[in-house]
Image (tube, rainbow, N blue to C red; front, top):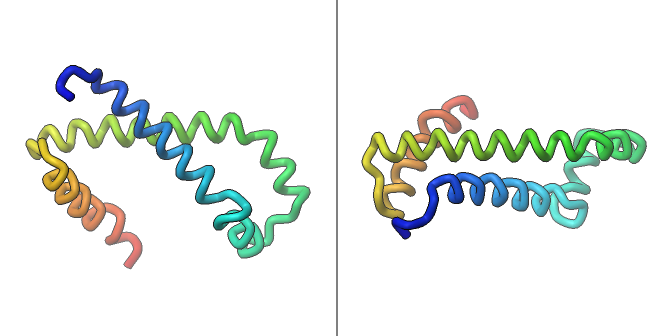
Length: 102
């Protein structure tokens, strides 16, 4: 594993985020209920489809940036194992994502 390029991990994290988002928001999973909850009409959906390539590209860049930053955070905390990564991820989530949800 030491021989893999770190940029490949960052790119894989970005692609994984896009794939998970496409599955999550698919009409047969949660996309249909989501569109009904926000009162999205079929016409609005068609208009949004025109911007989808740009939005997908921006989401990919955003996910890759988050993975890049997490690489430095994990290096600063000297995280080298899966358990250490899960521990650091939990505490970062608890400090930065969970607090605004309260």
